[in-house]
Every structure is written in structure tokens, then in C-alpha cells.
Length: 299
Image 1 (cartoon, rainbow, N blue to C red):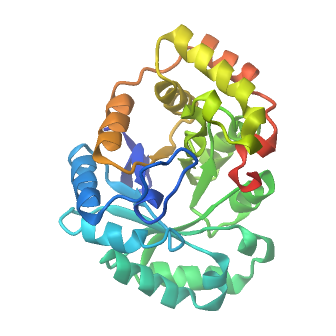
Image 2: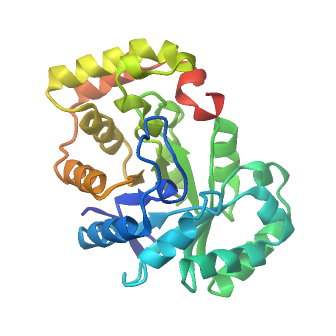
Image 3: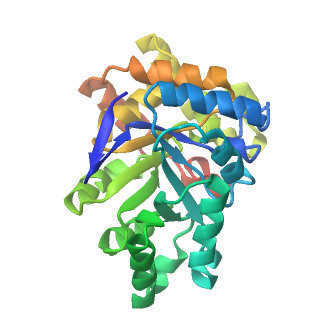
């Protein structure tokens, strides 16, 4: 498994997002949440295959507790959790303690804001609270999960933020258009990429699209045509595009079964970078997709 070096740590380039462990997540999800026993098998398998970083959140149902049990016998995992802004405002220390208890660990690799509201009203006291958590060994890094260009720009300028989690996929190319990867590298901030498959939308059959996403049909057809031309699956194409253009960023993937975990890791381990002709075609063909398609909050 490829590793991304960040300061004194090395994170698996392909890392596991765990929202499916606590919620029935994803537009294409038909199987629901996996049982604890199945999660244990998933975590064991991905760890044996070089994945050392796990992303969760207090808002992901009971994902923290399920993940904590599954990580019981895993040596030195890097665990990231996220808090809604109300926890950040009300009692940050207690919130961290709650997550540490759920995850059965003494420290988080990173604590992330699950929404960007505090960025717009930042106070010196927030920075001091974060520093206290770091000095106390409860967290190593602090960051934010962003949704918009304005969110990203505020995160880049905030010295308390080390990690920025961004949405990025074939349909949502804001990170490329606005040079998020280069800007983060200049400021020594680590990028985590979520939504590689846009909650499964990129992998759906066009006749399975819900009515409110009917406008995505033309882009699904384009994506299917390109994957057929290249003789690779849409899964491979979507992941390969993100991997080819994202530099030293960590890519999150999710799964709700061991077979999905095996499939995703196998695809990632066998990726070859797309050539510039294909990359430029993807940039051009999916350049101006409406936000109502690429932003799940608009669904």
C-alpha cells in the first residue's frame, strides 16, 4: 500500500471511511449496515493489506463504537473523528473524551469539524482550546471537512487547521479548477478526499436514477461510454482519475461488506496513472456539471 508522508507520520494513501458502519449510507446502498462481526473482518482484512487510517464521526450513528471494537487488536491505527459545530462550541473537551471512550483509544490522529460554521466566526479561544487538546495528547492534529470554495479558503488561512477533508470526483472537479491541492501543499496542510464515487452515483445504472437526479443521466452515459472505450469499470475509472491528479492526498473509500473492501483494495493496488489525454477528456466532458448533481446536500 502506498503511503503519504505528513510531518512525522505516514498515512496509507487509500484509507477507510466508516460511515456505512453506523448508517444506511449511499444512494446505491441496498444492504444496510454490516453487523459487528462483519466489520471486524473488514478491519482485519484492510489492516493486513496496509491500511492504517480510519475516518469516522460522531454523526455516523454508532460508527465510533463499532469501529472501536473492531480496532481492538490493531496496532497503532490512525483514527480520525469529526464533530458537529454545536459540540465544538458547547464542550469540546467532553466531546473528545466521549469519542476516545467510544473508540477505545487514548488519542485521535485528528479531530475534524464536521461542518465549517466555526471557520466563519473564529476566535482566539478556539485556537487555544485546540492547542490544549494537542498538548494534552488527546489529538495530534485538527482539521475540517469542507463543502464550498469559501470554506476551503478559510481553512487554508487558519493556522489551527492541519487537515482539510474535501469532496472530489469526476463530477465535482472544484479542487482542480481552484488549485486546492497546490494551495494545501504550500501551507503544509494534508488533504483527505471523500466522495470519490459521489455516494455511489457514479456507479449507478442510468435507469436506476431517482427522479430528482434525472439530469445526471447524460453524464452517467458519458462516463459509461468512456469506461467502455478504456475497457475498465466505472469504479476503476473514478478511482484512477482521483488518484492520478490528487498528488500527496489521502483517498477515503467506504464499504459495507468484506467483498467490497477486497474489490476496492484490489482495484487501488492495480491502478496505473491515466495518461494526460484521458485526464483532459474527463476535465472537458465533466467540466460544468450543475451543483444540484454533484452536491449531495442539494439532493
